Length: 69
Image 1 (cartoon, helix red, strand yellow):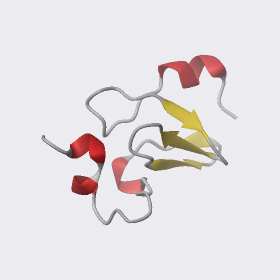
Image 2 (cartoon, helix red, strand yellow):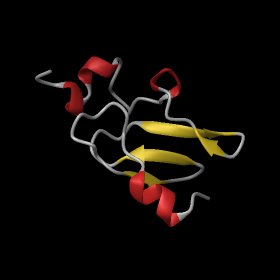
Image 3 (cartoon, one colour):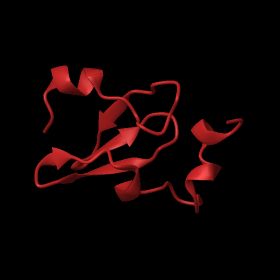
């Protein structure tokens, strides 16, 4: 579990609007685009290469936060 203080400052690394993340089942979830960042060895991994895209999304370019870039 991530401390509330740390969770309050973490933001989705893919979203230019600095969308907050929420903790969900040993992972962090972007509240806007629903990308999941899994925990690795007890720590959140915010690496884009390790992110799990939401169902129906086959590439990062299809995410709502990437539209109009």
